Length: 217
Image: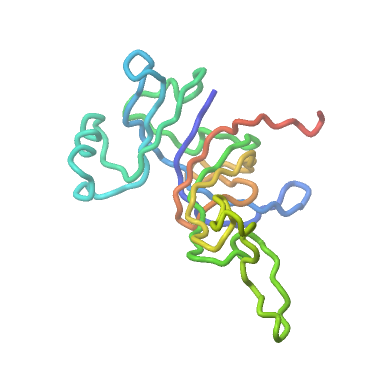
């Protein structure tokens, strides 16, 4: 029963469990998201709901999107994402105009969180790929260089060679994170561990694709 919601990263903190152990958590403002469109297998070839999140001024939305939101009878939103409905689930009962809030998830559930990582700009091979450096003594003539690029026969650099370049700013998904606490009134999810992206970055939280085993098993 798939389910998902859009949100933004607020930051990291820690909470304490009943035994007094500190748990590092990421605070996520999850929703509220509004259903803009229902897609069906008969019309679109698959079942899904389209969620919209984030307030935005109407004059910053192009004409096709304004018509899309007007058809749904909702105010324009900044982000649109689809959640596939394979096998039903709580989202399958929603209609256009309904809201999805943080109480979609409950404490103890496991989720996958996707976001855009922090951009690091142009970086060398040591920072980007964890290469080892050379000797730093005088006369070594090799300190933080890339090193050998391979055989000299082809007279070219092979594809896939790890070199200096742009680092970060890519989509990453962290799987199997546990929801520690849910605050429906403030639309907050406290998720154990860290998630991709900077503070204020867009996140897509969905039910994990890998089932977690209980501690007793």
